[in-house]
Structures are given as structure tokens and as C-alpha cells.
Image 1 (spheres, rainbow, N blue to C red):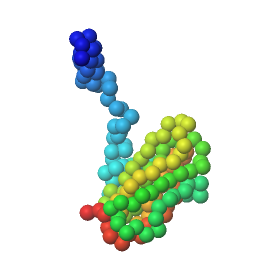
Image 2: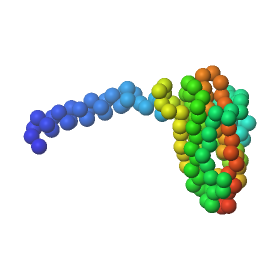
Image 3: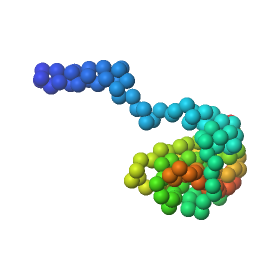
Image 4: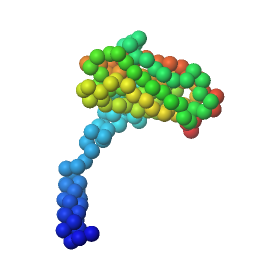
Length: 152
């Protein structure tokens, strides 16, 4: 390595370090706001919906791909997709878990409205998928039977 390359690398690393310390590189989109934090800490499905400000309407336009029976509740793959227009969020909730809200995906315009996660189920439960389309929230649910629970 020559001196010039070393100096450029050191200058770049120093600049990035200063910018990060000043908060200029903070991943603000990844940080949950207070409303979402409250929703994730909710102890029931109704509490989570209330914290999210959601009064969902059931929709046949949401598809949930999840097993009917999960041998191990610790790893249950769930995929949701929708044909609803203007989707900005997809959330996954496990109805009977101690904290039902498991995940929320914030989608940018032009992204296919599809999300997949691996969820933990403490016992047999409905997985509820919420989709925010425009100013409305829609929902669909599917029961997943669990033979061995995955939540403590």
C-alpha cells in the first residue's frame, strides 16, 4: 500500500466517523417511532391494534401462505401478499403470543406488496396480517396449529 492510498482511506474513515457521531448517518427509517414501540410492547391483539391506530376491515385480497400444522412453534414461516393498491405497510401479529405484534414492514412506492417472516408461536393461534392501503387498514388471518410451542 502506498502513502497516498493510506491517507485517502484514513481521511474517508475519519469523515464517516465524524458524520456518524454527528447523527448524519443515523438509520432513521429503521428506528421505531414511539407509536410502533408501544404497539410492539402490547400484551394483547386489541391493545396492539389500538396502539397502531388500526381498525382493520377484513379483505379477501390478502393471501397468507403459512402451514396448517407447524411441528415446531419456534420457527414458522409465514408469507403475505396482496393485490390491494397503494400498500405502504404489512404487519404480522400472532394472536395468542404474549406480545402479538411480531413484525411490521414499511414499503416504499413501487415495491411489490409481499413480505415473509419466520415467526414464533407459543401455541396454536391465528396469524393476523394487516395491510395498510392508502388511508385504510385491511386484515386477513389464518390458524396455525402448533404441536410444540416456541415462546416462553
